[in-house]
Amino acid sequence: MTRKPHGSARISMMKQPLVSVLVFLAVNAFGQDSTHLSSARSPWDNLPTIYTVHIDEVMISSMQRFEELNAAQVRARTALLEQHQLPITPAYEISTSLGLYISFRPKKSYTEFDQPVKYPDDVKKLMNEKVNPYSDTVHTLLRIHHNEIWALDQS
Image (cartoon, rainbow, N blue to C red; front, side):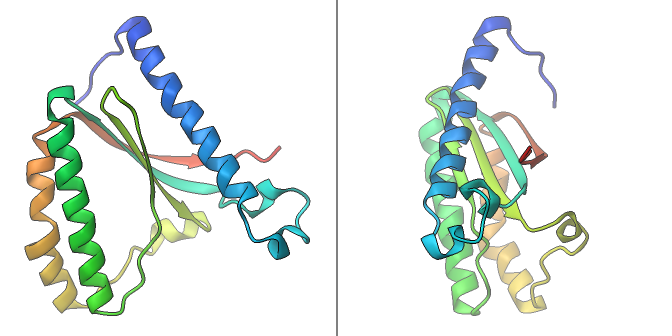
C-alpha cells in the first residue's frame, strides 16, 4: 500500500522522528561503558552501523489499541524466547503523537540479512500460535507500513 505525502503536514510529521533518531543515537553512543570508549576514536565508533527499520503509520484513532497489541506481542515473543532460553534481539522504538512508530534493530553487518534467525521447529510452531496472531489485528490499524535498511554514515 502506498500513499503520497501531504505537503508540509507530512514533512513536519517526519521532522519529529528524525530528531528522535538523532537523540537515540547520541544517547546510545555516549551511554556506552567507558572501557569500550577508551579504544575508540569517538563514541560514535561503538554504534552499530546498520539497522533494519520498520515504520508503521497508525490511524490516530487506533493508536491506543495499536500500542496495547504491540506491547502484548512483544511480551508474548519475549516470554516464548525466555522459556526456550533463546537470545532476544534488542530493538528500539520511537513514536510520535501523530501515529508514526519507527523500530530499529541493530545489525553487525550486511551478512546478517543472509542468515535469518533459525528457531527450532517447536518454537516456530509456538510463535505461529502465540505471537503471530497479533500481527493480523495490528495490520488492520495501519495506514501504511514498510521496512528499510539504514546505515550510519560515520564520515
